[in-house]
Image (cartoon, rainbow, N blue to C red; front, side, top):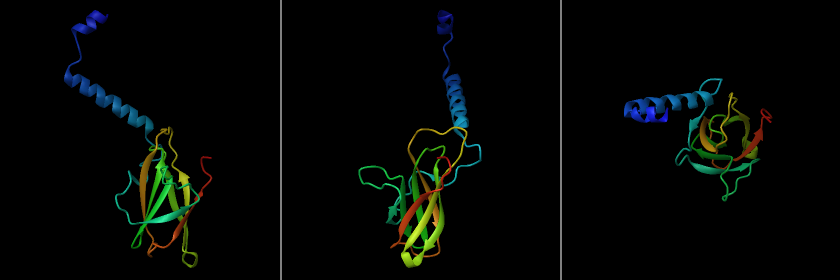
Length: 144
């Protein structure tokens, strides 16, 4: 059998088709059951002034699970987690008197979640300048 297969090696075109098919099958297996993933893959370059984040560890030695940036009236939030089941932020409250933004983080549900750490960027038009605000992160309790 091996001798027979060696006589008929895969051609370049056939190898390409096999590689594309295998990749499509792998990606389909990791696709969310609820539709297109929210946010944008990757970290946004120079999204504004970095804000203090409370509620999640944010150490210069470790990649932060949540980072927040303010520019004009836009809040940019970058979460780090599974690329197929990302942590999805939602603004639940803005407290101007306390200079505080409350974010609730929930996990995007999919049939299968990859065990990788990938950044995902979310932008919110908040209608006010948040450059001096602190962001407090709370877990929604889903998927615990």
